[in-house]
Image 1 (tube, rainbow, N blue to C red):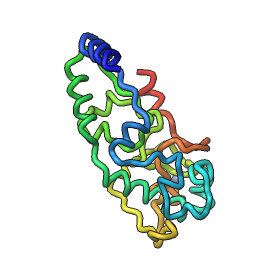
Image 2: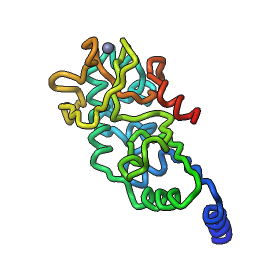
Image 3: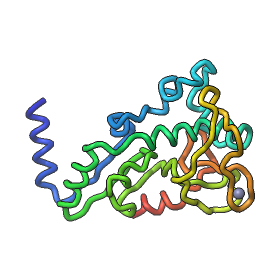
Image 4: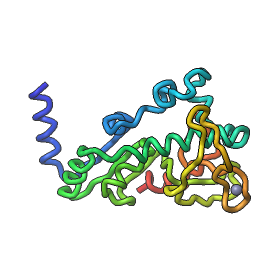
Length: 196
Ligand SMILES: [Zn+2]
């Protein structure tokens, strides 16, 4: 194992270009539960026996937006409480010493950006929880939702008042992140980034 690690370190050290690929594991290290395990990520509603496909789909934001927004409001809060750990800063230091570099991540917590990685160098292939779009969608607009706080019941995860709404048509908004079942996600920006 030690030999494998030192040869990996040697490759990283002597390379001109670095491409970082990061999935749920990097976030889990920062205290963010993997959403695929619904029972662990959302213990409040484990008694409902819902799986990830039943709470992560594009229809729920139209059919049951107050529950959908309770679940995603809770997720946004959980992610806000966690900060990018030291690993992100080490990776940034390595990247800045290279001729060229990119980050490709499926994580939607924006921790690479919060740690100081420039947005144009980070491909978020599932985009992020903190950008919003229309649930329909009525148009291609995506807007910043970082400061949006959702007021939900801590036990049922149902929103108490109103939900975040599309600023164009007034229908339910939703995070601009690809859901487990999703034909309404606005993917244009992510595809442009992937092309680069
Ligand atoms: Zn709309």
